[in-house]
Amino acid sequence: MKISANDLKPGMVIEHRGKLWQVVRTEHVKPGKGPAYQQAELKGLPDGTKLNERFRAAETVERVRLEEVPYQFLYDDGEHLHFMNQETFDQIALSREILGEQAVFLREGMIVSVLQHEGRPILVELPETVVCEVVEADPVVKGQTAAASYKPAVLDVGIRIMVPPHIERGTRVVVNTRDSSYVERARD
Image 1 (tube, rainbow, N blue to C red):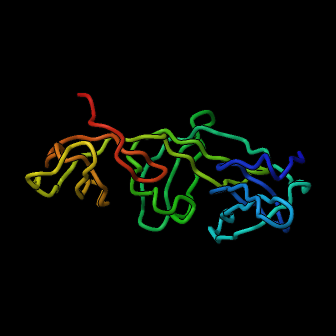
Image 2 (cartoon, rainbow, N blue to C red; image 1 turned 60 degrees about the vertical axis):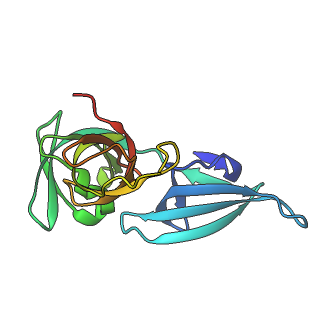
């Protein structure tokens, strides 16, 4: 399906230069001199290569429709991530690179969406948020106001994020899986 380059949105998958690309970020640019264009940051699927591309306003791109299939995460053998189709119970093993940095958020039994193009898995979408536990947090510095200050904390999945000053070790927090950012304190 052809769409205007001006309609590109983050998350879309397009075919460009004979490859599949996921749109990571877009910006509409209107320079003082010359025609407007759409600046897009693209991520190659499934290899993860990056490409910054300018599309003229009159250009069209081929949007790719992907089949979304629910899978359950089974286990990680260190090299591959193993999933089971929720409808047919078939199992697949995907390379860790398909998820990239988001792989740390996978939990046994988690339901994910595997996006397929012509029957081949090319992308795995995690739930938008997950609950993690803070295993290490810096103490609050007196004089910091809660409104604007954040402090570093380490989560049980091994990544470091910025959290509000009231979050302490042992606190369960909701984390956005797309950008690894703090969302809120988890409700028990």
